[in-house]
Length: 102
Image (cartoon, rainbow, N blue to C red; front, side, top):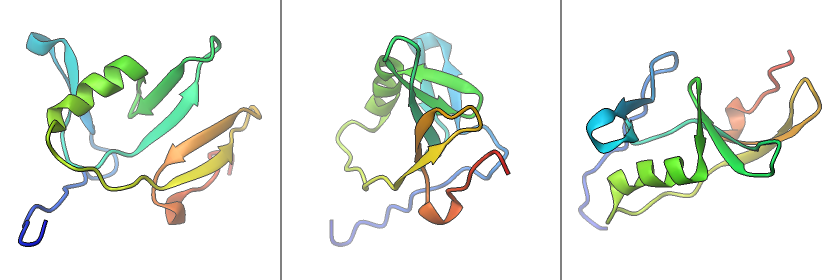
């Protein structure tokens, strides 16, 4: 990786991070960094929340194929308790990890 000049681009807060690419029937990231919320649904299936979308593990994995052949930097995870009491894992910078109840 020495000499690699790639810089991961983070989409500004408030701007959509993903878009739906109808010709490939999949979501595509708009930048190189994704802020997301990892949860499970009522059936215990993994759900990844990005923007206002809830992606299944299959949809999220398909979106990551956009980066096939690339490496991935580790995730920053912090556990939060939602206003309703459910436990969540938030993929984010721990400095920004705050409760939405405030």
